[in-house]
Amino acid sequence: MAFITATDLSLGYDAQVVAKELNFSVSPGDYLCIVGENGSGKTTLMKTILQLKEPLGGRIEVGDGLKKNEIGYLPQQTIVQKDFPASVKEIVLSGCQGRCGLRPFYSKEEKKLAKDNMERMGITDLTARCYRELSGGQQQRVLLARALCATQKLLLLDEPVAGLDPKVTAQMYDLIEGLNKEGITIIMISHDISAAVKYASHILHIGEQVFFGSREKYLESKIGRIFLKQQEGGENNG
Amino acid sequence: MDKLILYLQFPYVRYAFIVGVLIALCSSLLGVTLVLKRFSFIGDGLSHVAFGAMSIAAVLQLTNKMLLILPVTIICAVFLLRSGQHARIKGDAAIAMLSVGALAFGYLIMNIFPTSSNLSGDVCSTLFGSTSILTLTAGEVWLCIILSAAVVMIFILFYNKIFAVTFDEDFARTTGTRADAYNLMIAIVIAVIIVLAMNLVGSLLISALVIFPALSAMRIFSNFKSVTICSAVLSVICAFLGIIISILTGTPVGSTIVAVNVAVFLICLIPGCVKGVIKR
Image (cartoon, rainbow over all chains, first blue to last red; front, side):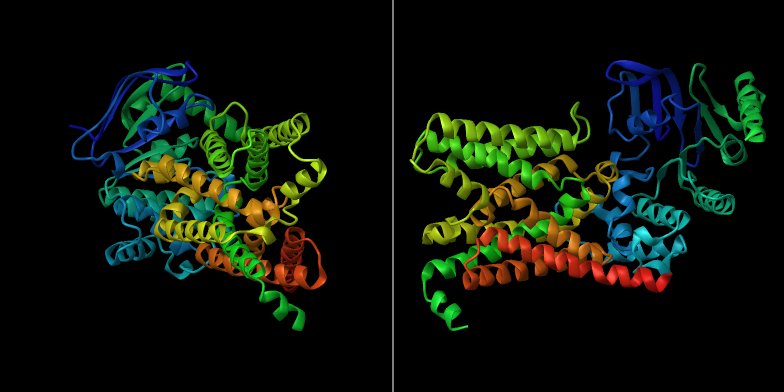
């Protein structure tokens, strides 16, 4: 049984289908990378997995002991967050919110959990700093620590390296790989196909053609080779 | 000073102090959230809706106008805050539309069915709250105290949830926080505060009570808790000073309070500028 199973899933907004006939599953310990061109419905798929959005058709099931609120989520930055006056500690702690239910304040265990996760992400020295004054990479670490407070099972990362410089990008990928090795299942949306084939165990390619399978199969598949070539060509030109 | 002590012996002046400080406290608490959610103008929009509702209530000659004003304002607040992200007409346009529409409609109704001979005086006092704070009854003061206590309680109990929902609604929702319910709660509370605050500064200046303390505090502090506390403290001080000044100099209460808020905001800009200069 898998954490997440999608059957004949179709996605879109206002009855306009952007992706259809998606079949894939995510098992514990997987590192799934979702790739595809802009507008192919990557973010919509992510929102559907998170149940923020209803699928237009098909089914998406959560199972194997994974509860709906045990999916940690690293969203893309919103404009609101860019000038939000909040300390790192407050933000990381807010990841424990789902555990609270109607209880108004955080318990000692939750505060400890937040502290441990800050240590894990190497941001303990930033605890009292203001979120908006941090660099892009530091901000992503803060949000990762927050997501880890919400779950120990499954993390969804939406373009985690967008806007980061190459060095910080590499550090970020290492960090994510480390988490995966600790046993946390990762689903990552990425533009960065070279990183996807380097780190992921499975690839889901959405767009006009759909591919789902292990990394090795993707590298052998026609769609994978074409896409890789295009991206490399694009990067060389740019 | 003598003049102040003399005035404080009148119960209506004491009422004005109590109500003014309480309303300033409540509005500033939610102000931080509203400013960060990009809803700074909701105070303006909703207060104009309240003005429209009030004019209808006046025409219908309801004895207790609150019975009409409060529900109408709450419905509009819910409509504005809930439709926020997914609506066809986006946040700021929706607020502008509602605000101007309700203002025009209210004035129109008051003109077509005049209830008193001094129409422009009535309109002016509703818009700028010129005298109503000095004509409060003991009952209204108690109502205000109870509602303010409720608002402060709600805010403290749900502080962490309000923070989570304000900072990242989607994340809060995926981890099982009922974001819609809290948005609804914020909408209702802000509507109640605005209807209360109409007595103090009138409908045109309510936005100032909501946004200025929050903006001032955001200049000085950089974490959510300090910003919230600072904004509450600044707001209470400003309301207090504003009422004192208006009594001593005979200026209109509402606009004096707002003027004090603006002055405090300008003072709060200084630390930021100094920091900027030092960094350079």
